[in-house]
Amino acid sequence: MEEATGTQLGEVWGNMKLPSKLQIVEEIVAIEKKFLSLSFAHYGNLYIASDAFPGCVEVRVVGEVPELLKQEVATRFVIGPVADREFWHKERATMSVDRGPWEQLSEYLHAIRKREIDWLSRHAVSKPRGGLLAQSEAQRTPAAHIALYEKFLKVSDTLLPTGALAKPTLWHWDIHAPNIFVHEDLVTSLIDWQDVWIGPLFLQARQPRLARYTGEMLLRLPGTYESLTDQDERAKLRSQVQSSVVAYIYDDETKTANPMLDKVMQLPQWRTRRDAVDFSSNTWDGDIIPFRQCLIWIVRHWKEIEADMPCPIKFTDEEIQEHYRDGGRWNDIADFWDSLEGLVNRDGWTSNETYEQAREIFAQLREQGLLSLGGEERDEFEKGTRWAEQRTERD
Image 1 (spheres, rainbow, N blue to C red):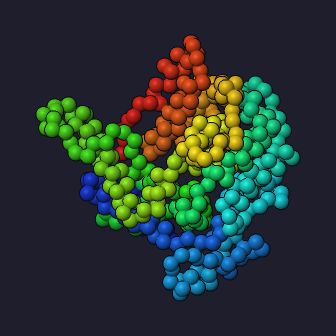
Image 2 (image 1 turned 90 degrees about the vertical axis):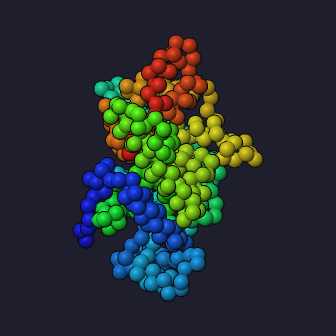
Image 3 (image 1 turned 60 degrees about the vertical axis):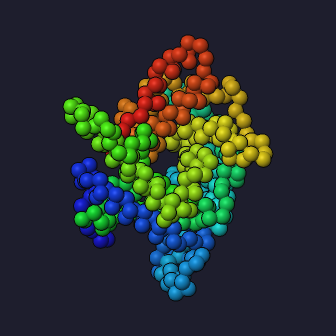
């Protein structure tokens, strides 16, 4: 294994001048362009051909790629079953589970649903009530999980885009400052490849964290900047401008250099569709709340996803109210979100890099909660969750 060369971007990003940051952004866009230059005929993990084992298939590169490159890839690599932990966790390792490779995206989603329903039916035992970290009735009952997976089955095919948006793509989905090494404003290394696989583009795509910004866009310092005497306010404005410009340039460069990636990110309810698949991976050992929240959100925004047919699933008002009762007060809700890729700890802490992503999720929960609650309970909920609507300027 080669040692990464250069300096970890996370150590220097905060002190970089804006031109240097924009150079790094252009480097990242170029890296993403390389990922997009190849697509494959199967979804699965990439293995060295000499390490091939039963279940692996020949790599077939598709698209306008030189024949010599196709032959080289086919000689050096194979595509095999996924190494994703959720396909091997606990008894799943010895179960007859479809781990791919898959030619159709729908096969992948159906494999997740079948894997979890089979495991829940055979191995999940209802968890006891009470305890220091008491779980919701839905979380502790296998039937509640199975019911959600059955709902997921009814909408999963409709959630999937077709054509190039779903093409099997090799992608590094965790491009953020700690995983990037640089030297003189050039990217020299990208680390943390262990979870990389050939997956559907619309599920793989992630906006790099250093280019995410959801605050008010400010592309230049205001005319009043020079007259400000408060140094903290001046620093805040400079930071806001830098974050705005970095996000703007990334989006602009992506539209020009990687229009297919931009098209994915403009897909109606793209994040909700993607998150529904991500959160379906293991609700029993993870949490049922995020998965159910995505399905509720899908029902609510169904016309944006599919305008020509009615939504095949529904949640009653009582079920929605129960969903938010399960979450409890917002001091407790972090317990339910602790499994979300480390976004939020039990004490409510989240890192600077993941703050806006975490806040966006909680803002969605707040909006749905306000719609479902009433009276004094709604008033308390509204006051206690205002922080989720606040936007903080961060690098």
